[in-house]
Amino acid sequence: MTFPIDRRALLAGSALLLLGAAPGPDAEARAALDEAATLAPPDRLKRLHAIGLHGLSAGVRIDVLAALRGAELEAAIAGATDPAGRYALQLRLQSGTDATPAETYALALDRARLLTARADLLLRAEGLAQGSVAARLRALARDPRYLYSDDDAGRDRAVADMNRWLAAAKARLSKDVSLIPAAVDHVSVRRMSAADEAAVKAGYRVLPSFDGATPGAYFVDLHEIGRRPSWSLPSVVHHELLPGHMLQLPLQARVDPHSLRLRAAAGFIEGWAVYAEQLAAEAGAYAADRCAEIGYLQWLQFRLGRAMIDVGINAQGWSDEAALGFLRELQGDPVIFAPFEKDIARVRAEPGGFAAHMLNWLGFEQLRDTAVRQSGDARRLHDRILANGALPLVLFGRVAAR
Image (cartoon, rainbow, N blue to C red; front, side, top):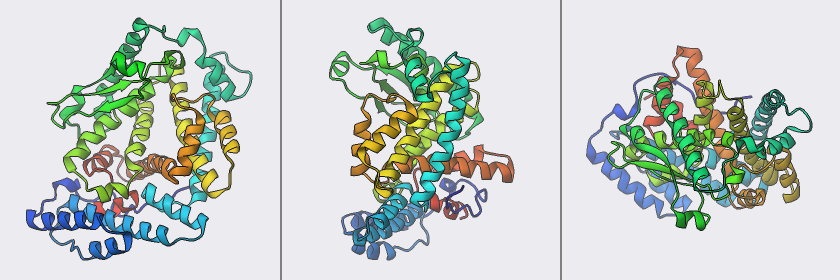
């Protein structure tokens, strides 16, 4: 199954950031965007429609086009009286695609079945053949062979292991992208301070500058280290660092997309980071480490499970209890230090948000597969995606054609 992404002239032209424009039109358009951001959606639409696209640089043109799409959807959401119709609009806004709730759920379910079958094979190879995949994942997560000691030495070892995975990811990076900022040479995994660990602070990122002059780091959450088996950490490296956030976000910062564009492409950043996990796996990151691949699969099931309860609760009438049972059966234990109930509450508070992450992940995959069929070259596509920063995927083909 596919979902609507405009792929016209996908491989035409050069990277959009290479297109220049006079500063005058850009400055006027950005000022108009700033003004529009203060207005209610109907008035915002009028203000945005008054912005001429002629003479704009590629980045500002994308800002305007994305802001227009976002304002149109927000106005429709504000006027929607049918909950199902409202959610369908919220999903389009959050994801930057035109996927329907039914298409979204079907995509997630199909992929979850494939990943469950693969995890079953790998778990059997590890001698875990009895019970559901979720039950076997719980058992593997408690195997002392894969647990770090609950002390400074154990936490230091976990961080050292993650930095080894990071070095390997950095060495593979040029296979997937050629647009590589100096920032990637100045990132690392670090332990939190003792105060942050004691305060049970969640993992967080400090981004590097584009040129690497200011280093970046991911401060990993290890306060409950007994729930972080070694095989669960490599995918965190690929998501949070390379080729995930620490590649995409410094490039995006250079583009400086307008806040209205980012509101219309909310799922893009997380979607890229999940896609980055997949890129690492496809590049052979787990060829010699079966358990690390199991960890990667569980992380993907976590993303898919979030997407399915998003649709299930908001479009299919699932109860919280049904969603909770579904998550437990799909992925075993939570892969983050937060109960499943927290995700369920977030689904109700932010309809479409989790599904948007998945739609962007699978949207990047779909664009990549199309590019490979047409030219055999995925790197050029990845460079275009990264060069422009977050944008609604439904606009990608349109802006790439210019």
